[in-house]
Figure 1 (cartoon, helix red, strand yellow):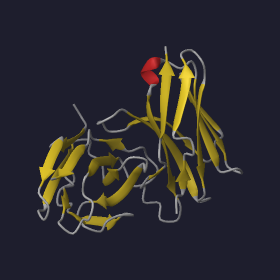
Figure 2 (spheres, rainbow over the protein chains, first blue to last red):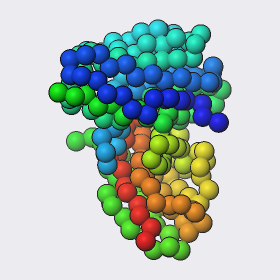
Figure 3 (cartoon, chains in turn purple, green):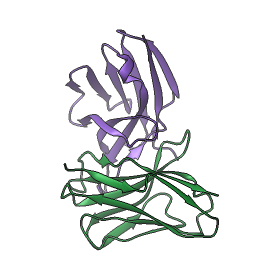
Figure 4 (cartoon, rainbow over the protein chains, first blue to last red):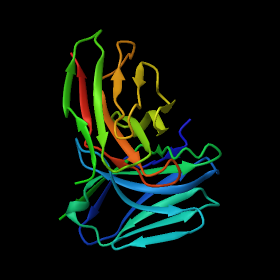
Length: 114
Length: 113
């Protein structure tokens, strides 16, 4: 049972435009959400996070939106740059066990064309 | 420099052999994790440890073993019982075991030959 889903395996965007990456989750107990960026053969690097008490968090070109009623979050990158081309993973944690372990989605490969 | 170090970066193993992947962190983090990445499947949790001398099975623990004798070290052994060991293995740590971002190492690519 996939608790965190990224239904778009890939996304292609023109440089300077907005990139929107989506993520859905099923467990209503999740209370902390993160986005990671990953290049091939490297470990993921943390991008931005959001707590369930917020509906928006912004850091420079990156903004994460959380819609708890829809169990949906999205990452907006504006403006997109060629260096943003990578695989993006959303992750969630929380719940009764609250072990801090992250549940990851399958990832979305973003390609930003010059 | 603080960080997480995984070694080796590439590892080849013959079928039927056990192999141990190293993970060391100098971030003074309490929690450590092992994930496995396969194409199209994201990252799946193998084992995690919230504190020294304690660890828990993740979603795909069969065929793996870990130890946490020191705070900074969390080695993963891939045993011969693991049916499909060829994968990219990622170690991570977080400051505490609750709602903090995890920092990842550079990964180890294990190939069974």
